[in-house]
Length: 357
Image (cartoon, rainbow, N blue to C red):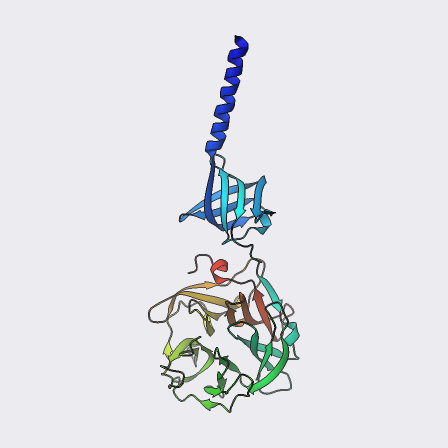
């Protein structure tokens, strides 16, 4: 009889223990907010709530039947997560979205010349690059162009196009607006294989007690962003508009932005969601600023300094290519000296800047 009661008691203990363990296990769908593989911690957003967990050595991490380690987890990934509710320890993670490559800074050595390369401008697909060079023996900057087969290939066959300091190119590659002789000029060509014609001055691009520089065309070609350079005041980003590509440009107006340093060299992403620029700071140099939250009047009400863990990003003329997830700019190499063309690969502003919309 004693053995019978003992057996029943043991079965009951096993039943309640198993039930308790199962009740403590929960599964949620969410998006990774942050992860620290060294401290073995992870934060996941689930239904607008942030939940913090610990990763144990036995945490199982999978993506399409492939085993991963905690270092492979990245902010922004969608996951299905099983955890122990009482202990806050993750038991299993099923990664639902692709494992994204981490940002990587690359110097475009294939276009290096004696002197400096600057002002990158990319076609919408990111395969055609326009840029300027200034060699020590030259008094004038020249615009060049080069092509690549895909985002992993080198740029090849550079071709000299036209003299200019700053410039911008339309999405179809047929129109260019340039900064020359302290003024903005306009030129066109009939096909992308032709040479650009002699530029003519944009008569409405007049800035009182100063001049306009650093032009940037919007994707539809109907808005022109530029730097307003005024003595004693400092740079201020301006914009001009036109009704059609054959219409005259309006007079420049100041663009409403959150100021971070002395901002110059504007670039608006092709979807219109972000405005990139450079913010000059005495202590840190040329920070790259990302503005978001576009207003009805065309301005942007949020701003963040680009800061990527483990990578120093300092430069001018930032140009974001959404098609290839790349951020091109002109920056100084680690050894200092002349400006060189650089690209931050695997770049996504929505992931790099938390909370950016």
